[in-house]
Length: 242
Picture 1 (cartoon, rainbow, N blue to C red):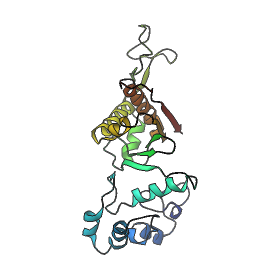
Picture 2 (cartoon, rainbow, N blue to C red):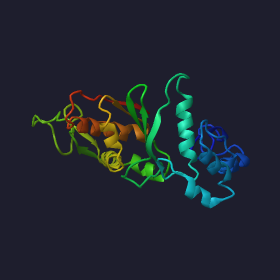
Picture 3 (cartoon, rainbow, N blue to C red):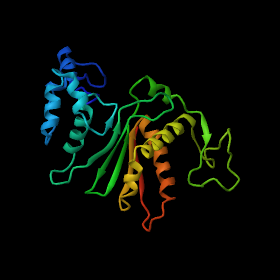
Picture 4 (tube, rainbow, N blue to C red):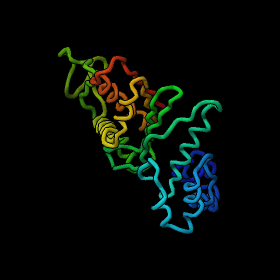
């Protein structure tokens, strides 16, 4: 399911619907398949939203920001994650998500899941999908950044030109995106939820632009974890896809 439209309704490798009717069905939440274990209120919201537009605004109480008023993206992201889980495994819970792209150099759409079975928080970052993120792809001017103190010897350059073997530098625009994403997690209370689970590890993942900015977000998490006064060292992992 992609941006409110069923993925199978698209031509492979494109955003073009295979048939006009598929696009119409995808744009009408009341026609879409319901997620398992939906509450009565959620079911009413989905089935009646096309007939009673104001119902969407009154009934939607999800955790996703910038979603459609009927919450279809949240529903189907949950469904995709749950379908990928083994049958007997406890399903991960969506803690927070945002479909908003706030413009070049700002936070990308992302989500945070809590997996109690594996004791981990999973942070996913969306890749290139619109004009704003295409602009972000081009913001690769290097800038010095050493969040873990690896280049404090005095030998490393702190301004261009950089040496790939000994200097610490990252794309300036991507660093701003990662900073904005981290501050978003702080302001909406997600960091506090993570801090309240000291035994849980943090896994950051993303694809394409989401992988590049996600790797920097993981370093922000590692920098943050080192400031926490806890007996057990929290692990931070990153897994990116080109």
